[in-house]
Image (cartoon, rainbow, N blue to C red; front, side, top):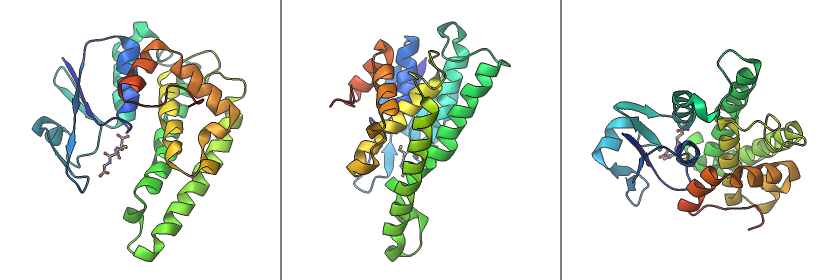
Length: 216
Ligand SMILES: N[C@@H](CCC(=O)N[C@@H](CS)C(=O)NCC(=O)O)C(=O)O
């Protein structure tokens, strides 16, 4: 039995999309939070994710946190779906490079934007942390936009879980000022629309109330 614990519009979205891409049976269990944003339940989630961060994934008793790790395990457990190239191939190495870049470099910059107050002990410094995060995200956006080239996916016609991850992260920029929007870059907007044209990914985003297209 597969249970995804999470909250719509968060790092939950990537494994949710992968589950829908796979078409396997699963249950999505919503995590409860109090007014301060502290996770309060359900108990099985709190046990799985000691810091209360979403998502967590339980697969037949195997309990995982870390959105990228959840996506990887789901893709590896279902090689027939082709959401990752074969282990040991150059294509797999490039997919891993993308996934690691997204989860190790881009996602932490978003966390500094969303949770700026955690990155300084000086309340007066919060705005500067946020501004630096936006500057870094803009630089990363422009770099990834160039690397995407004609796309539509990160590895051309080959769709992988790294594309799911990029679609999730590019959608988070809608919470920033318009000038910092990732969909202002045409190749990134085309990438999001290409991912959302896939029925599985689309079902997950739709269920979470996310954007179904860059057009609005
Ligand atoms: N690296 C973790 C990050 C998880 C994370 O920070 N999740 C956010 C939502 S996107 C969260 O639960 N934040 C609550 C908090 O930090 O208090 C992952 O990718 O799963």
